[in-house]
Amino acid sequence: MMNPKLEEKLARIKSGHYQPADFIIADAKDADMAFGIAAPGPIPSDPTGMKFKSRTEYLAAMKTMAQSGLIDILLCSASSLELLHDDKLFSNTDTTPAVRLNDTTDIWSARGSSYRQTPSQPFHSVDLGAIDPVCKLGLYSVTFSNDVDADLNTLHHYREYRKRARDTGMRHFLEVFNPAFDIKLNGADTGDYINDMILKTLAGITRQDAPLFLKMQFNGHRCMTDLAAYDPANLVIGILGGAAGTTRDTFELAHQAEMAGARIALFGRKINQAESPLELVRLLRQVIEKTLSCEQAVSLYHEHLTEAGVTPLRDIKSDMQITDPVLMA
Image 1: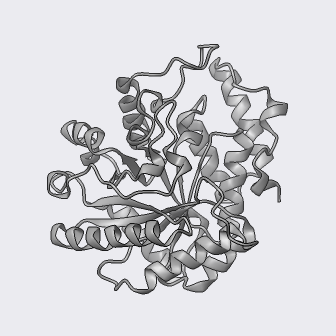
Image 2 (image 1 turned 45 degrees about the vertical axis):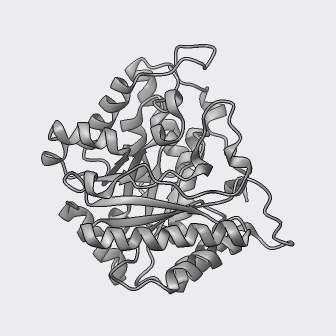
């Protein structure tokens, strides 16, 4: 069920014939596996920031983005994907559906919870047999904590998942989170640790079971360049978006990561919490294809908001700022 357009892009990337037009963009709308009621995002007009959109609005945003032709992959929860499949959404678009296959404890973000303060424990809500009729691509996530018991358990569950996926023909991409707390690396860079754990994990996996690509945090130009140069014919790097940040942050993250060797952006809150998600992604493609600078894209984005009568979340001066320390570096 992977769209031929996505297959062709991945083939060109792996063959060494990548062009910026081949860059893959995924809209990650699987936040209901982590945040609960807050998943669809805050209502912009609510000054408290404590009122959130409904699931109906969340599903409508997924449909709009998938039908726009601007994205390659729509990632969502199994329950959302089933509803979208019932509506025959993916029969009429070039967008490939993908499902979040596991929901480890470090993404459990219920209000008041403290799960992210301890090493990730493996867990999956999704039944591969149940999702098989509607989807053949999924995200499997791991988080390494420099804790031998926790990391062994994580790798054991990932191995067992690959055996089950082989039986159903489910293909996957691998998300590798940075740990959310200090894991005591004795002065080593977190990005170097993550790179080494990724390569250690993939070294023991044969082609049949290997992930199609990675989804990971941008840990700076040097770390991403190191990883991208290691095995470009087999290892395709995608970046996750993290917090919403400014519009400049969104464009800079994609631009800097692409320059360092990333070939995929899988953005959730950066798209979902934008005032105009479609315009944001349209300009994002132009930034990646180097027809616009990041600054020009922010200016054009605000011009669009003005013309559309949409009140921006920030004035253009504030929205032009880079706030992510990794991007500043």
